[in-house]
Length: 381
Image (tube, rainbow, N blue to C red):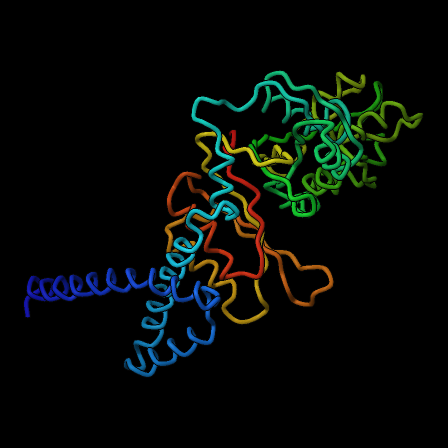
């Protein structure tokens, strides 16, 4: 048989498959109505196992993996459609609440606002806030939790917190606080981080015996610090480290801080750009107590937990794939007190107004134990 004839036969088969696929998807409405009436959940694991077992029995052995993958995807798309139908018009659904939080296209992101940052003047959080807002009114707090309490109590409208570094990874404490306070992310920025070695005037680099800084900065400069042969001392913030060095009576200590801190605290720049990687960026997020989504938002953040059983994470990833949603970050960490169970962080690249994204929000619940939607936002580069 010639190639053209083979392709013609494939096209004929594909046309039949498409008709059957459309017919199958139309039945989602009837299935949803039946489940709503009976009170059944969208996800029926026993039914899926039975279905996939029958599929595996009905195809040649060498086609079992492909057949099972195909029908898993078909069922995932059908479940997503069922969830969309069941959630339509429900004001308490996540999708409807997301739509309500979306600002009109002519409402810009605020240029002026009251902001909470961790640390003191010269901290990278303050630098990030000054780039995110044209005229920020900044209040400083000693800890990340202090920033969150200020937002929760209404002392400020927004908080600015570091959430991820390209070298040291995610700032897990911030993710935990976002979940604890049920906060929302309304904007983010990728800030180039260049650490500098600062000391009191007259100090030489060979005099340094101890370096003070935040634990993330120390991790980002680990190779450099090892080459100096110095001890390290962890501070709450890089700017606080610079302030502490400036007020110390010692002349054998230095701080890893921003260049701005040299001028702020009257320190000498002993060495510049000392981070181990020149591609050293930190993502900072703007958090709010209430959801705010501005036009043009294309990035979304989620955190979820899945059951401790084979295939549980696969079902989540399969849903992203079925809806054509691009996953740009996936990270896990253990859940305290639960052996070998994990919480997963996801960042998605998908416009908030895309129908597939709205469908995802209301269909994730049937493939995970629980999840938090932190919001959709624009990332400033």
